Length: 510
Image (tube, rainbow, N blue to C red; front, side, top):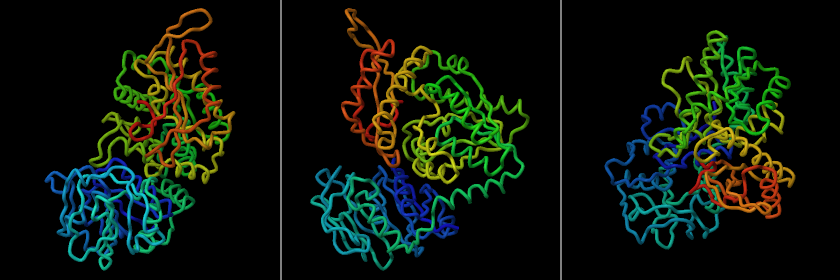
């Protein structure tokens, strides 16, 4: 079994990013909610524990807390932000709250000698997001870092192997943050880094081969990276006992359906059934504008289609989905607030007719899914295909969904993606697509006045899809895409480019 680190989740929205950073060091990280019993934590034999951040104040009786016994297990602990304050609280330190001690964004950090700060300069920029702060450290602890407004930006009890930082080393905004986490993993916890993707893939295949046996399994195949990797993994485990259902709901990109059918039938020799149900989905979505309602409807219809197809095929035991970590996070984990419900983790009906749902990629981030895809032998062109949400173009059209709007967006999106490829930017940009806004504006084409749609172009750069920067696409490329879309796509007379980071926005518009 792999050596592993427990990331104990206290409700911060981006806590899984900590796990992502740990895994970058080839150390497996498991995220569990703060409600996990200490007996379960003892049984797991973790090499270290990381307390995450969270939006609460430790003095609020409703705030997430944990038994102080966890600090006496003999397992190294690192507290981050709220996690640092919680350690101080459990060890009888003092937490204070004052507006003039609030820090948000880039802050200058001064460090002293500590295992946590090995190979870290004495003065760096870190990322802060807090109002409460540790005003008095507990007995046995010493301050190891400060800022202009925070008297304890980091503290430690080296004898107990307990460390705490008020800032966020997991985000890219903190200089040497990766080095700090690496120091905790290897210098403090004694990890060796034995978790590699090759082992994960092989162990997963063996696991499903043994657990599923002769079970008949249905796979929700969209043709995107996530569902494709999940399908190939299960195919290698159980072969022809896997049947892939490809639902062409009419919400796909240009030529998507034909490409998916051709690739998986010809290259991978999978059992794949294409179900054309565009009219059914458009009927269900008729008049619906609210984003969450769209997702719920699409999620439910997906499952209903699978149930109907499984009836035709005979009894199917399990359903496979390409759920990945960001899907789970943004649909709400533990007490984290819900950003949006993903179709493959939210909105599913309670009475689905399967023994269970298999999610082989549930613990992987997008770049890890791609690594798994390469290990499985999936062609690089498919592995690096543009991410595409399960609800498809339904969440890239603002307002009501119609066939005419879908046709407009399909053409605009295809042109934008083509120009990104022509410029050789495919691998430099993590995700890029077009959005059909619900905004119409006045324009002029020839000598005629127009009143047509505005298309927004979205492109982001990210390593994990938890945070993202807008892509600095050269103006020349944007100009070509804009000219082509307005000239070649009917009913579009204006193009805008989205320059919003995540947060505060999400990658998708809905």
